[in-house]
Structures are given as structure tokens and as C-alpha cells.
Image (cartoon, rainbow, N blue to C red):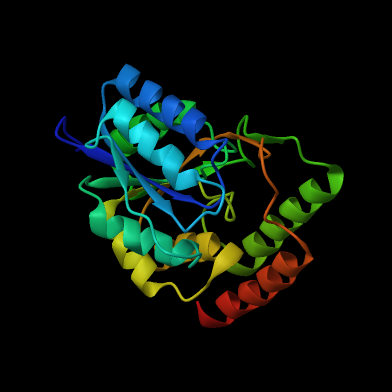
Length: 241
């Protein structure tokens, strides 16, 4: 059973999120402190040219070095390696992964923790496709692509989770470590593989309905190229799991 000595490390990979970072960090601190959970936020900036790291340093001065931990890298090296890098520096026994672009609202964090504690789940996944979850700010094309991608993954992989491509999750630290070590995908498919492997290893997965809000500032990362690599990755996973 989870105890009061639990600590939650939030891994925030950033690339050009200078406008979003102050708000996401303020919201994280607010929701953790209101719920009285012990936490740290690890900002992994991949050499953003827009001054994201400078903004992070200012935020560290405001909230303190034990709450805001900066672990930057020299250049853009991708999500999977950002998590590996972040875990090395995480002092929590639980790890949150989420996007820094405000598409994931920290208000759901207490719900993730509550559900995890109640059932001692290994993984809690935020879902846009169950309960009262949903998406705001997407046009029909994006919604159709996302639903289609998710449906295809459900049919091929039967993962025991309703939202495979989401990236708002809570993991027990040692389980996240094992999952990352066993993952071979890069990019968009990586999140999906994490849940597929979790099912493969017999880990328990709980779900919390979330509302996903399309990014407020900056450019969306999903284009035609991503869709092609998603399809390829999905077939590779299907062949190897």
C-alpha cells in the first residue's frame, strides 16, 4: 500500500516551451501542495533556442531547487532518452510523465494518485477515450486520426487500456525503468509501446479520464510524417509482441 513517505517525480521534457513553462509549473506546484503530496519537477530541456532553460532557472529561484530540478541536454535527443535521463535524477518512488505544453492539466494528478493508492496499480494512464475524457481544440481531422490510430492499436494489440497514444501517466519508478529498457520504439509510438509492454509483463494498469487540450502556444508536433511512422511502429509492435 502507498505510504505517506511516497514522493512523486514529474518528468517534463521541454523543447521551445518558454511561454508554457511558468504556467504548467505553477499549476503543478499548486495541485501537489493543495493535496499535500511530496513532489519534485524535473525539467529536461533539449537545448531550446527560445530561452526555455532561462525561464526554468527563474522558476527554480521562485520555487526552490529541491522542487524544480533542471537536467538540461545540449540538443534535441527525443522523448525516450529524455525519460531515461530524467529517471536517473529522480528521487521519487513514483514518476509522472506529461507534456509541458499545457495539453495535460495538473488538476488530474490527485485523481491519478488516489486511484493508484486505492488499487496499488503499477501504471495509471490518463485516457481521452473513456468515462468523461475528451479532447478540446482539435479539428475533425485530428480527432479522426487519433481515434483511428487508437482503434487500430486496440484491435492489433489488445493492450487492456483505452488510450494508447496519450502521454499523461503515473508509473511506479522501478516499473517505468523496466518498461523503458524493454522499449524499442522512438517518437510517437513510444508511449503506445510502454502500455503494450506493461500488459506483456503482467503489470496492472488503471485509467483516469482526462480532458486533453490542444497546445496553447507553439506548433503541434503531429504531421503526415508522424502518421506514417505511427503506422510502421504499430505493425512492428504487432509483429514483436
